[in-house]
Image (cartoon, rainbow, N blue to C red; front, side, top):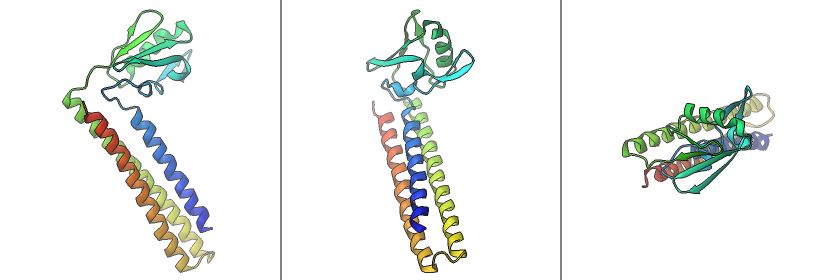
Length: 185
């Protein structure tokens, strides 16, 4: 019983960590990366579709992303989606290929992005703490129904806190790594 609750909490916390990692990957740094544009939704024939399903995305140079649509008719829709995204980069279109030139970040923009990273990390930490709270409620319910003893409850509560601390620390490490990446020139 206790093991199931703890495993469930661990799985939920792991999903939160994976989501944070993916979210941080989409934040722009000074270098080009396909993760900046892969998840951008393009209105393709009335259906919001991730860009990675509509085009071949590559990074031929450190400061350049190229997007080659599988359907040349979708190039305008992709361009529109890029302009509406929060990337802040104007796409260059030659009819077959879209080029995104990644400009170097200013110091002010770097600090702004670091604040975004910090906010997203804090959101993830709150999510981990919510998973802890839910697991704690499940454990209390088991104790209340006399399915586990009071000693088992407190032992499981300590294990749950250790698990929570581990994931909160992991979130901090992910955020610190991304902030270091943003702040490096």
